[in-house]
Length: 151
Image (tube, rainbow, N blue to C red; front, side, top):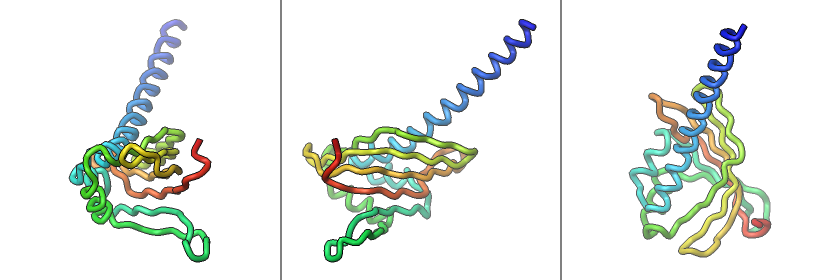
């Protein structure tokens, strides 16, 4: 009986350690994007995404105040980051929820964005990541942006 409990405990710890390292690798893939932004490293930024990634933002129309969803190309995003001096773009995230099923991960990260050391806006990022050739890549990101209610 002791042997059985020892095997059961070892199996549980092994599965738990595997799940933790997978979660850590998903976090590392997301953190890579924000490190690239802060460092103005376009190559690292582009390497964070799949070749056909989708980037979107939920906002409001200036004219009608209706909810709108805008899309941005990864290359255009990279060009905008390249124009910012190193250290000027600082998006500080909190990993709130991470769900993983095989080669798919879903990540929810509330954030605060600082530009040149000053608070700019806050919101939430929702990521979908895919593990390709053993490496997590961002396939889809959609975010919200606001200036109030950021705590």
